[in-house]
Image 1: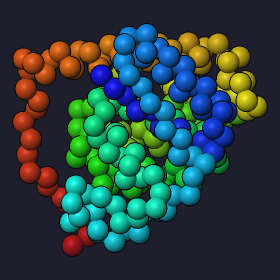
Image 2: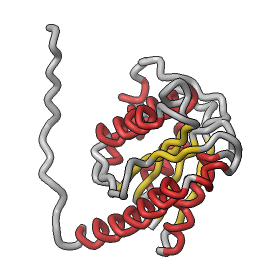
Image 3: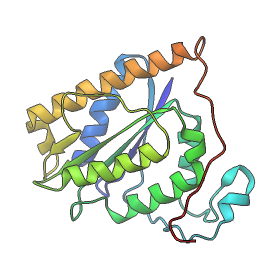
Length: 208
């Protein structure tokens, strides 16, 4: 099994990285392959609502000069994925937001019933808002999220400070172990239990 971890922080080795590294370490103990992709420090276009991905082969985005299409394919092929982000003005940093908008718009239909989760890192407040924003993508992607003992928010500003947040680090470790367990449960269940029956999507606009 394989899990892709997305680092939405511009700091490659900051506290968001520490959170994701910790989760990757727990997954590896369960013999789950991991790959961390750093997108926060790259130049990523925002979605321009051009509709190209709706008609293009394999629903690729029109922009091909940034990592969105390549990373989206890795997430499609993986058994699960984890989103990590720092907190900027009580929300997701702009680059990560652009990345997520395009990945989920092009690829949500490939994510149904994959195991997925999110972790946010914050200096003081706004972390729950950031986590909520990340989880909105997971919900609309119809993913399955494992549990933990508390919300997946860790505290730290300077590099490595997250390690001093004992409860936060424990929450992250327990969540990663639950992630591994859920991956294995779903993988085992696929052999005997079919996925829920699908229906054609109904779109209801409030203004007609």
